[in-house]
Length: 116
Length: 116
Length: 116
Length: 116
Image (cartoon, rainbow over all chains, first blue to last red; front, side, top):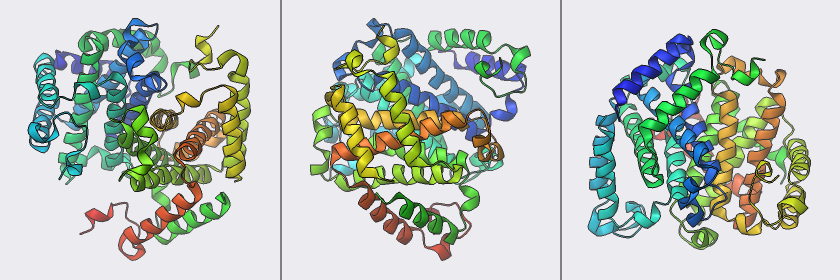
């Protein structure tokens, strides 16, 4: 993804609407969680199997839109906070590799703290 | 951001831990919302002004990590669903430009439906 | 539940800590969603069957605590907004009875708008 | 609040619609978080001051309904899990009194772990 390009498009979108003062990190964190809640609602009554097939149903467009909304607010929040999102994702992945050693967690969904 | 590269790294991370069966769209939607909740908790008692300065505090690393977690699950959910995330974001932005005409919403946080 | 009694205990708890200024409706809405996110995280990797048996596992206390946290912030938010929570629940249930006619939705998880 | 009465009404509501199999703890946790997300969305662009005045605006009914939805799913989740909600709230409050000693946290929104 050309994240830099999207980040610039979002800055323009906000500037043209003079929405900068609404886009505090606090408000964007709320919007991010609100959109994540909309993704949840699309899946809440589905079986795991139905959730795997959702893109073949009439809900496909809504799923695409809501996942895009979460991504958009995530990019926007990172931008307002001055976070380099790619670097942050890579750094967190390095932490997760150390936190969840493959040979200890293989095939288990447990949090590492539950292992011992 | 080199999203393609990150998507591949995440696939490897999941495969090495044999976590594929946990990563149904339903479960990933829950994880996404759970991480968005952790972002919320970092901001919930802050004033708008304090939220703007959070990266200069001891919470900066936690903010970077939690925003990265949301982005990671968003990329992973899109991958499992076969959604082209960049295309979805751009398509949603086009919809938002039409839904929120700059001359009608300028300086207002109202939903368009509240405008008349 | 003696909700009135709990509401008073919570008022005392907040007053003794001088936390009133943090308990704006906006902040309480964030705290409510943050706690709901913690409930989510307890269930996110479980199968439906495992979720039914969670109170027989080591997670039982955490489940009880997190569900209590959600209820607590819900009571607190209603109190700060001057909402009569019991009346609001009953009024919403009346709406839901009308929105989801038993003979139309029996055995279906679909939203009514998906029926027709 | 007559929680016992509401719990029974909700059981009847679910039974008449044969929705029991959808009401697993996992699915109810998702519905709870989804509704908390809808509460969030009502407050996300408001200033703290505006959030205090929301019940005097056209949004009052939506706020009442969404807070009721969260409470409803909270009661329903507790019921399905066999949790005594009033006892759980009181037990958690006792923990919070110990975790946040009034003389240490007075006027501060910090988590106790940040105090030293």
